Image (cartoon, rainbow, N blue to C red; front, side, top):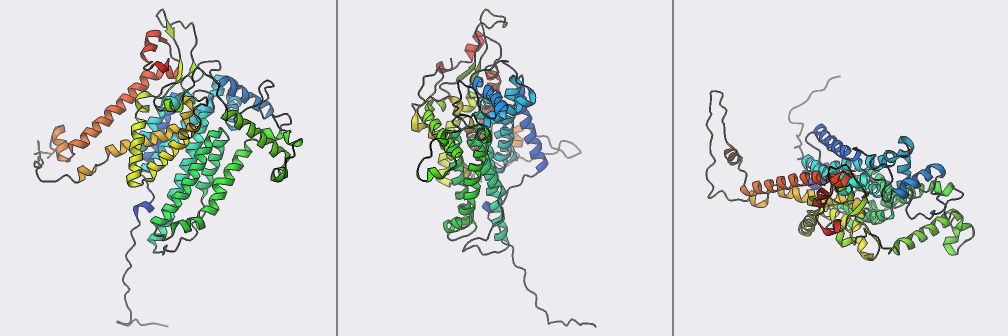
Length: 541
């Protein structure tokens, strides 16, 4: 059987032009994935080197290690804190479980206690580097953010001490990073629908599973299982994730984005951002639940309660009562302390915390010697945070850039919430979980300085001198030019050169400042005169 094609019987259908996906619905990819990861690993290695160097010094327990390193051993023995003279513990168990894990692996000594915080601090640098690359769509800015966190004194000291706040930093940052990945995935899926010509005017179809939002919820629940101060981050970031969905739907052309958000985002968010974090939090209390002698474990047996409270299992009623007692303790903690610091002073390093300062130090070659581990930020970096925050606020107010908004929400969650009770005993190390977000804000501001400014783009050609045309110096046709000629050939505006120079000088000063402060970050041996030179403000002594 044959068929004959006759001319004129077919009609060509013109190709439909491909729709251009809005930039806000595109997912960023680095120019070289391998190169971006190599830079990330290099920055992570820098962080690991500073955090694991001489980790076993000092050999004994310093500052609040006397509580957490001790409680970690109790967790290994019983599954809960079992100090008969001090069983009412006001922090959840997860951080102590992590300290217990490395103590079990490496031994019940200084290295064993501090290995878990050092790992957590190193992982924070890795996560922040990748997160900043994604947020700012730049490998360079991601590396800058990672380096700044690696050189931050607060994160460094907390990574080398068996306290809880460095775990809080890692889980909060990881939870936020997971939600940012989810944000990109949702926008990428909407972008694919947009490019395919799907009409999204009246809403969007199901966008598929969202494992990264679930992971973000679980990680924020684990942050809460380290310290309750993660609560404000959890609530803020959960709200932010829903707002990001609304913004994505609006960018895709949905006419009623709020309605579509309540239909497509909110129901699933209840599971990922509410149920999952609560479940993760409760799982951290397994040792307390199964322990017959854990604190307040059987309170519910003799307190049946009334109403809905009476319907809960006895063990859960006991845990809720335990939490109520811990809340009362935290909200009425007004005890005096030598290193108590008001939240306002945290912004300017007004009162750092001394973790280790032995007396009768010798061996420095002078008549008076000193050793100290001082919890303090790297000053020349830290004091740039306030200008960066001001710029982020202005940038968000004028552009509604989600990155500036996220930095400010984290700032309010990590610092602003403490203003509700300034009488409470507080310390500078409460800033630990906030440090990566302050670094993000600072990196954002630096990136804006290094970008092509509006005046560079709109600089009128009239009045410019003609660009020099270098002549070949030899037979190979290669021209030799000086720095000024190279700048002129590339038409680099003077204003941008000034900004580059200012950033370079500041970064050099930050690195020099970190090196200068290194002995008081790590307890290095100094003469008393050398120690005094590093005490720039009266409140540091």
